[in-house]
Image 1: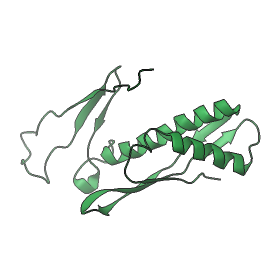
Image 2: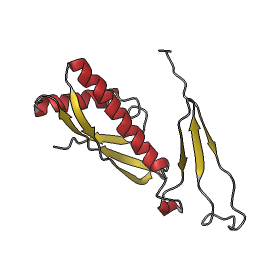
Image 3: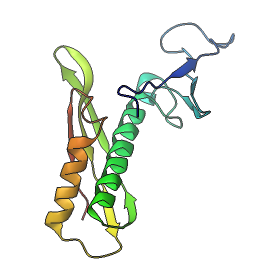
Image 4: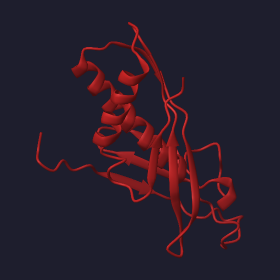
Length: 152
């Protein structure tokens, strides 16, 4: 692996529909985001910012990034430990708030639930999540608290 992998993507907005007033409340917020390799998605803003909750938005994508990173890192840790994961799910919540005079994420809580092929005690599970959290690229890249509260 290269010392500093590079990831690239593009965002395209098709413009404001002619039948909509060009102001903040009426701005069409739908975009198409594409990545190297062919992955793509349509996105918007959350409805509280006049967007479409049926589409991902920067806030939900941030939480998705943190959940996916914790999952992948957890799986690597489990495999290296010799444990077989049978199922994994997560449910995250993120909170926006004012900090340093700016609206931003102030906290994201991950609530992963893991089922193993063999019994794993609570201390071992906590150790796996702790190691995954400490090594997750995304949680190491943000300037807000990311907590992991494994579901029982």
